[in-house]
Image (tube, rainbow, N blue to C red; front, side):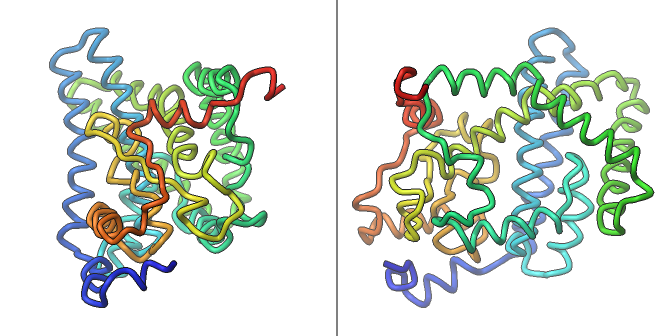
Length: 306
């Protein structure tokens, strides 16, 4: 069943309506949260605030990725140029992302989700897996092994910068400039050492929250090779704390995004409610948080998974 057959024409028009003001507010909040985290840690520097601040910065780094995703779909703002500008200059650079390169692969994911051609399939094809295997994956992330490989890759990219194409050069240059600006701003207020929190978040937290987001969206779904999004994609009904860490900017409503990718993130919650009221999800189970999710995707006994 197509969602266009469930929702009225007026509802579809409202759900796909984009707003420059709402898009700007989301981007502003994203950056204000980063500033607030650094400010709190600078004012009350102790082991607890350093650890909590690093965890929250890792979540905000994921938040930048979500904004890149939205700008790439050109749904965050009503104005196309704003989507491109914010995506390329304010959302992608903090985490060395490349808006255009990312979207080339991501649009293929939307086109081929539910098939063997899905380019993101390696991220979740093996699930469900054993608890032991999931712990090993998360330990590689949280211990910095995954992040260190990413940093080495960035280092190789910087070394061969002259050989990069123009698009890649632009993305790398903007990323270096943004990170220098972040470091320079902290240095100017006498807190340059706090930039290490940003690096630590990128190495130790960002890989783990990114993995959990990927797993939440498509791992151990009812049927990974069914064209129906209700079978190959998942939404997580999460509380505020879970969303703050693992699902910034309402990215937990991922099934709705696959049902209708033209709906901005700020309308996905309403779309979920409308579809639930119409019986569209009568046969769909939703995890009630990310602890519940991780239990569901790691339900295979170790002996069976070996």
